[in-house]
Length: 493
Ligand code: BG6
Image 1 (cartoon, rainbow, N blue to C red):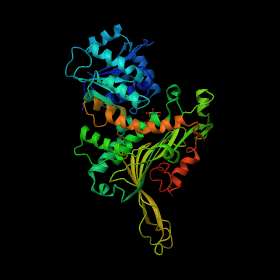
Image 2 (image 1 turned 90 degrees about the horizontal axis):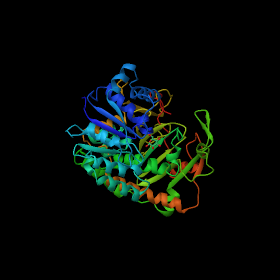
Image 3 (image 1 turned 45 degrees about the vertical axis):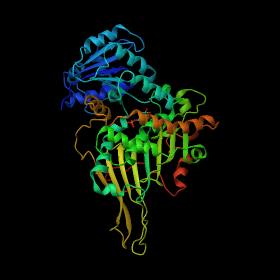
Image 4 (image 1 turned 135 degrees about the vertical axis):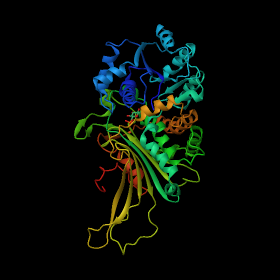
């Protein structure tokens, strides 16, 4: 259904806006999810060098939306979009102009998307308040990273909280907008079979991997000194962990879901001292080759001599509660790895009894895989009898469920979904302030431990699966990393 709303993107001509938000909004407009009466304001400090339509055409050419772009499509979309010159840390005429467009307030939703560095959140919220733009129909969407540790995140949350209530504050984690995450919830809480197996009696371990082939793609300035733990573990990986591990919520509303996620974070065993040495591996890529193309190492990419910033992390977490006690959760993310994929693997226990006399072949434990990307897909790895052999022989097969069902329906994509959720005032897939706080508290210990040691990150060649120690981390308990599903219908691999 078409929605009518006003959206102000602060940092409207910046990287996030161009790369993700504008293509997402164009998609939504083409799919009739955004009405022609909606208005999108792009704030920037410098005027565009061309008119809005020409600027949008360039952006959509560089970052094409899934639905494809036509000149007519851009003409129609450009009618919604207006650029406004605004200084974010002081009053400027642009603020009056913005207020002139957006006031008096009506019940039309007004979404302020802060696609700007967090150090500008406070002054922007102050100015929004001063110009009457934080009224009851307004909400503010903030992007990660929310600070660089628990204390700075708390300060940011307090500053936002002075102008927008918690109910008006939408902390975005775009991984929660991925379709597969909806499937994870649907799967867990709408099917009897999974719930019965989803616990320490049946599950051997869980792996969550977000692997990227890309390096810094122009974001080096942001990344240096931040690293994979703050960029990916504190938010995306811990959020996925919460959704996999949480108890069924009382209701599928924002409050109940967030309460269950918080319980998981509260039960995360803190990693400290020697446990960090043993259970966390950090790495930094050096020269190597990705997909057959030679690429330079991290410090060369940034043209700096040395850096302590990690581009890879693998770790073993434990959730000390009734459901999960004793089950390792292996989390892993890295840049310049061999493949781009994100998946959650639930590996079930090995069989209590084997029938080796009856069947030849190794019995591999069942694995249930939720793939978030590149495909939105579920797979179950099962043992069957291999009819091609002379004697009874076991074979591992993959039961695949392609969640696009082969239909050519354009996907909404995470940013469009989450922006429309903010328009609808639906906070289910946004992160509560307390979650941010607990997630920082957990990763802060690890980062502080590294900061206190003189050890640099381990190195790995670009195009490999991280430092050898990451294999060791999981191998020493007889387990192995799953490095992404094979092509669909490609059989087992
Ligand atoms: C962002 C990180 O949140 O997620 C980036 O800041 C990372 O470093 C990106 O590349 C990955 O997102 P996706 O959806 O492309 O897997």
